[in-house]
Amino acid sequence: MKFRAHSELVCPFIALIVLASCQDLGTQSDDNTQQPPPPPPTQEVSFQNHVRPIFQRHGCLGCHGGSGGLFLNTQAQVLRGGDHGPAVVPGKPDDSNLIKKLSPTPPFGDRMPQGGPYLPDSTVQVIRTWIAQGAKDN
Image 1: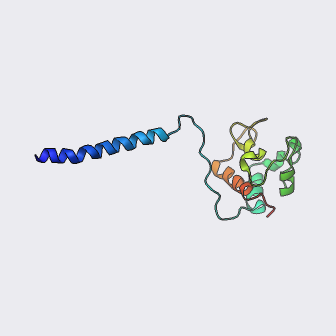
Image 2: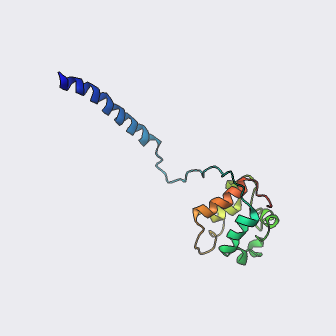
Image 3: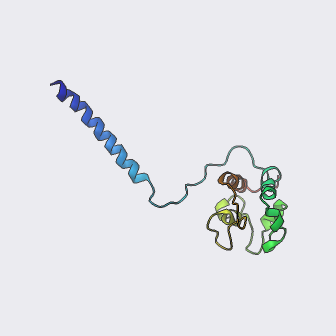
């Protein structure tokens, strides 16, 4: 009788675990798409203090002092863009050519920086956050 009482408690518990496992399987994505980035941090990202130094550190300013009509020295130049239009759409990082060109599959030309090494995701996230916050000249 004790075994029966014990099994009556265990069986529903096991059924619950199996059900939860099945639900988890249904929420996993079969394709390898990236998850959306985390929401922007509360700290404001500055063009002068955060974004431009990334461009300097990774050699972007060496080529984009006119390559493809694009200059990256100032916020105004970044907004103006180059031969393919504005590099940044303030408030819309996913619509910004700058973010697209830093991704593994840019819509035109090569991934930047050309030939690598490519920017770490955390560095791209800083640029993405700056754009999401309005791509301000700060």
